[in-house]
Every structure is written in C-alpha cells, then in structure tokens.
Length: 196
Image (cartoon, rainbow, N blue to C red; front, side):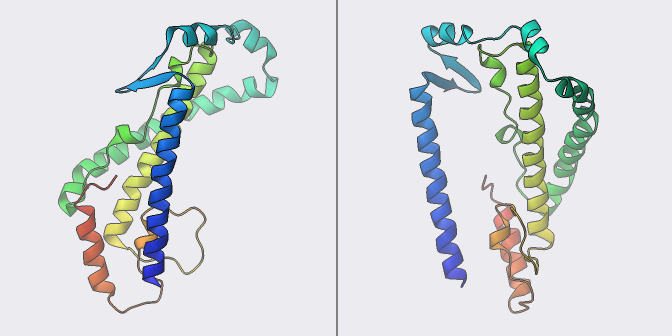
C-alpha cells in the first residue's frame, strides 16, 4: 500500500512541475516576466491594460450595496490576521530551532503583486492586496502547523479529512502500531531539511 501512495505522490509532484511550466508559458502569452518579486509588462501591454480600467468613483457607484456594507467587517479582520501572523512567526522562530525543523519562508506563501495590474483601480488593488496577504498568511500558517504536526503526531485520522495539508499523506496509518516509533523519527528527520 505504501508503494502505491509513494507512486501517487510522485505523480502529484510531476503534475505540479507540469503546472509550473504551463504557468511559465502563460507569462509569455500575457507578455510579462518576473524580475524577483516585480512583474514587468511590455509597454504596449501596460498601455492596453489602462483602457480596461474602471475609475474608482464609477466602480463605487456600480458596486452592490451589500459589498459596501460588508467591507468594514472584512477589513476589521486585519487585526486578528496580523496578530496571527506575528504569533506564528514568533512561534516558529523560537520552537523550530529547538525541534530542528527548517523554518517556513514567509515570502514563499504571501504574494502581494496584483497591485501592479494597471487595469485595476485603487479599490480593486487594495482588495487584491488584502486577499493576497490573508490567503498567503493562511497558507503560511498551515505549513507551520503541518510541520508541527509532522514532528509531534504524524498519524492519519480515522475518518477522511477534506483537503489535508501536503505532508499528511506521509503520516502513518491510523491504528497501525507497527513501526510507529521509527516512523516518528523518520518524519522528524525529514523536517530538518527545507523541502518547500
């Protein structure tokens, strides 16, 4: 059974590589390139994008009132999200060296680049920056907690989990005591390498 799981995981890795190649091809299709964290569009493309931009006042006038009413509640969540960001970052900086776990690189998860799209107005750019931050933060936090789970309790659950983290499939099966202690050691050793 474990061989089959490993085969499937290898297929997933191959598909992820194919996806990365397809995304690279799409960069060429939409005439942009990445330079570090900066996106560079060809000048003609950037000018064409500006033609699609809807001004901020028109955008506000066209907005659904429900969206405008809910905005303060959405943006208020920046307080607990910022606290989460600070908390998990401090946690991993203190605990991960003690456990010999490679730290999670925050910039691999939080991508704030949509503000560079010239076909968006200020409100759209703000919304996209907020969503990029919060969704990236959740992914960053998930990786930190996944590594913690791999260190302390790398055992699958009895019931099926919807959308488990990417480390979960390497965990030992629920109710399988054979080799459990050795499996924990193997899982911990894997954490010392940075496998992002």
